[in-house]
Structures are given as C-alpha cells and as structure tokens.
Image 1: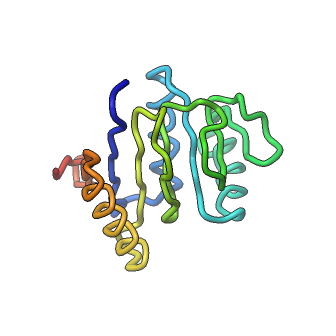
Image 2 (image 1 turned 135 degrees about the vertical axis):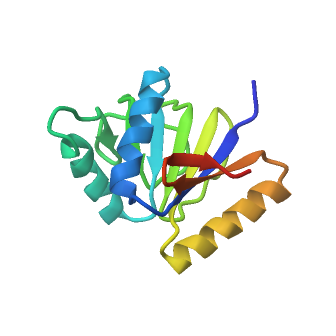
Image 3 (image 1 turned 45 degrees about the vertical axis):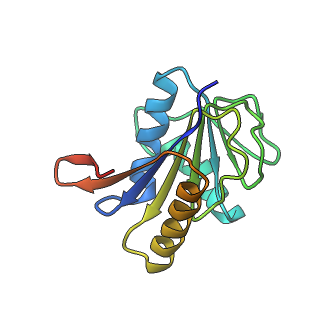
Length: 149
C-alpha cells in the first residue's frame, strides 16, 4: 500500500463552493470515493445542499453523516474514520486529518484570504512535514492551479 499524499489547496481566486465540486468530480472520474470532513454541522448542511444544486446540469451523489447512506461515493462528515472506504479525504475549515490509513490522497482546502484559516493550514503543513508525510502545495494562479512545492 502506498503512503497517502497530502495536497494543500490555497484558495485565493475562488472559494470553497467553486473549488470543492470540481475536485470531487475529478475524484469520482478516477473511480475513487471521497470523504469531506468539516468542523461544523452548519458547513456539512451547507455543502449537502450545495452539492445537489451547484450546477444546473449536474449534481454530485453524496450523503451527509449522520443519517445519510454512508455507502455513497461522497460522504460529508464531522467524524473521524472512513465510513465509505474513500480513497480521497478532503479537509475543510481546518478539520484534522486523523489516521490517513486507507486514503490515497488527503486534500486540505483553505481560504488564503482568511488569516485564521491560513495560520491553521500552516500549522497542519508543519505537522505533516514533521511526521514525514509528503505534502504538496497548490496555489490558484491566473491560469489555474500552480504546484509550488
């Protein structure tokens, strides 16, 4: 089993509502399942509604924990663990990764215009690097995502 890659997405030009659906679509196109971990029930509730309606011609099949079908390809949660056996973990609003066993990739999405979110992401970056985890940093440039390290 390969180690989990950690990718940091520094959101500067678009917010989470614009970026997350695209990343989830790409994840599903790879044949992977996704787990989105947030820090608040309000964020889970918002994303639950948003992923059904973010685009007129599409939606992302998903469930919100608790109460949703945790076998869905995308699960939104506050909890640790991996209830849908996802290959991809998405962390929003400073949610912590916990045990990365079983994940192929962990994506940390943070708002670069929010000082608190920026500081939390920097602290997560340091913890991953100190633990010997390979971390890659992506920044929104004029022409799309640019790999910085």
